[in-house]
Image (cartoon, rainbow, N blue to C red; front, side, top):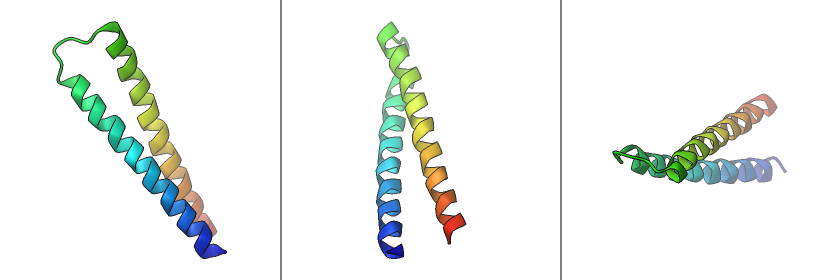
Length: 69
C-alpha cells in the first residue's frame, strides 16, 4: 500500500516536472524575442502561472510525503 502511494506520488512529481520544464522552454523562447505580440504576452503570463502552479503542486506533494513518512 505504502509502496503504491509512493510510486503514484513519484509519477505525479515526474509528470509535473516535465510540465514545468516544458513551460520553461517556451518561456525562454518568448524571452529571446525582441517584441511580443499581444497573444504572446498573454501566453507568457499564462505560462508563468502554470509553471508556478506546477512547482507549488510538486512542493505540496513532497511536503505531504515527508509528513506521512
